[in-house]
Amino acid sequence: MWFKNLLVYRLNETKIKADDLEAALRDNALQPCGGFEMETRGWLAPRGGDQFLHALQRQWLITFGANQKLLPGSIVTQEAKERAEKLAEKQEHPVGRKQMRDIRERVLEELMPKALSRRRSLNTWIDPVNHWLVIDTAADKKADELLESLLGLDLELAPKRLECQQSPSAQMTLWLNSGTVPAPFTIDQDLELKAAGDSRAVVRYVNHPLEGREIREHIAGGKTATRLGMTWKNRVSFVLTDQFQIKRVAFLDILKGETESQAEDADEQFDIDFALMTGELAALLDDLVKALGGEKKTG
Image: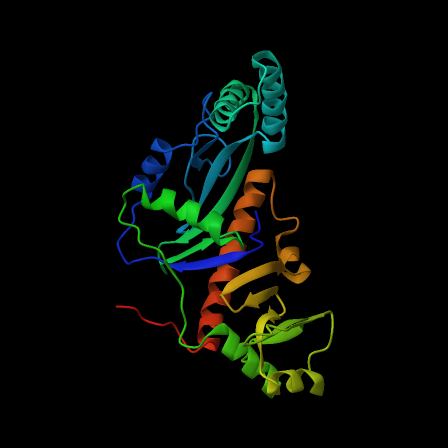
């Protein structure tokens, strides 16, 4: 349940009613793939059962899902090739381009109903009080699929990617060059520097001290930070990217230890974890926005 990656969005200030969102999610629940469908998309109950909106202390969790049939192109190509060879032998001349296309389409029609399907899911935390929407992914494409389905619920939701006054790349480069980072953050030992221009040279450091002169020399030579490992209040570590992706989020042992021996069952543990996670992430995001010069206001 603990989020591992964060794509952060701002919600408009339209009041969202939990009952309306629950009903809309239920009406657009994920369905199995039909015989000739390669993929279906919809919404799942985060904890199973019949509740599509998990609500706790004015914080919400929703789950987007997709069923996708697995039909490798190599299998289709192989079957189509074998059929084409038999047809060429029967008609005593090579199969033409149109015939080959028709054969391939027939193979697809026959194999699709027999194909196995794979399910994937994606959790999203919604804070209707502070207007955050956070998707647990580092992949923009997956986030776009979720947002497209969310907008399709017709609830006047208008999430926009969070932007700050200062770009993450510029601020990360400044912090590294000066050797200081705004409290309550500290710099860890993971870094990626990239050169501008045609060379696009990249230097990566993993588990390496970042205080040395070598880092400043790279910056003086025109490289800027595109990824930087950081820790917030010794409680949450993460990697910040130049695209304002927050990756490899790790809730440290000191934080997870706070939930030990508190729950009597799995459902109670889930709620404890969810409350703790959302509380910590909300505070972390507020501090990170401040460190990046505040939020950029859009018209």
